[in-house]
Image 1 (tube, one colour):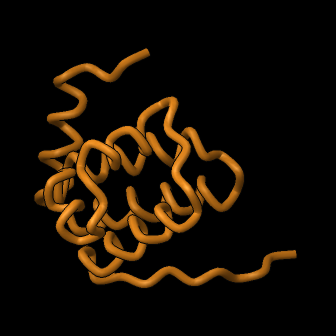
Image 2 (cartoon, rainbow, N blue to C red):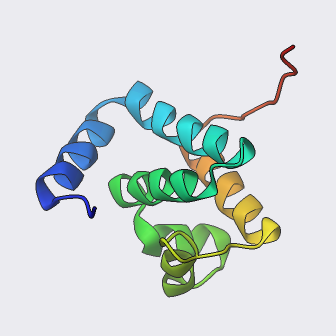
Length: 105
């Protein structure tokens, strides 16, 4: 089910005023990707990008065309590991965070 315009605007407004919310969106996307939930991770990344830097801004940071980024993070997109790494690296720098993995038993 596609998200409504109101929902997307709500996410954007909150992300613009709440640093913790923005960072949690990005963390959730990364966690989904590394835990094998690629489609969910891409959807959260797409929401994050739309609410923050935008695809044009991400293009400038990754040197990947905005249309390609939109396709990669779309429902049928299949980003390569290299492109996904470039996207996540750029977004971490933009947000001023660095994610680290830890082993849980």
